[in-house]
Image 1 (cartoon, rainbow, N blue to C red):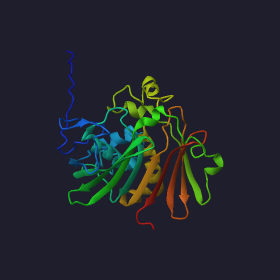
Image 2: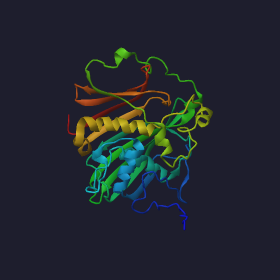
Image 3: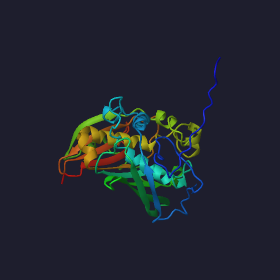
Image 4: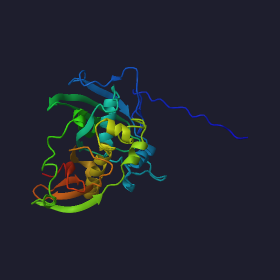
Length: 313
């Protein structure tokens, strides 16, 4: 006889270990709707207990569409290192533990992450942070918050600072659509930088459909939603792009990256799904840092970043 299985949703309490499950965007009675007018600097975020299980390490790579065996658990080895982009994911989840972020509340703008030691799957951790500042510039709000992840011995795993911007510019004409966003091809390899790699990035829509928040349809999956917000087409998730910049740094520095590094990246403009961006990495010979440069077919700057090992002067 055929059996019918009934599926029930799991609810994770934000006060328990494992609250920040990959792909689970939890809401609680203490949360309020995110509001630019009421969020204020000085507000503490957390602390929360946090455990990333081995299977979640695999789910993270699946969502990011990054296939790197260093971050994938196996039957013989479950305690793998988490992909370093987990810091940016944790930063965003930390804010969402306090606010219900409605679709279109803000867009990703800038991330700065420093790693002190690897994050190992199954480790018991504490995640905490604070709203650092909020300001207005050219008619847009900017919000910045910090996050810290520590182990049970209070040793620092990573620190992250994230900045988001209000989406007012969706209905505005960009005042900066000139040469600074349309750098000619000859500027792709400026003096003092040695190009060491270039890769095309194709995986955009699948990422959004693999996550439960925001639910489809949204700006990343539905043309009508995107055009209603002022975009000519569906926009790519900024988080996915950041993950590929982090991966480029990991490919260059290897295992050393998770034992002491600083990486920053800034999303210069919304990226449409028909764009075929190319990520180029350069070695800055002046300080041995890695310069990350993501541009579209026409040479428009999309995302800029920089990475460096912490023990290099």
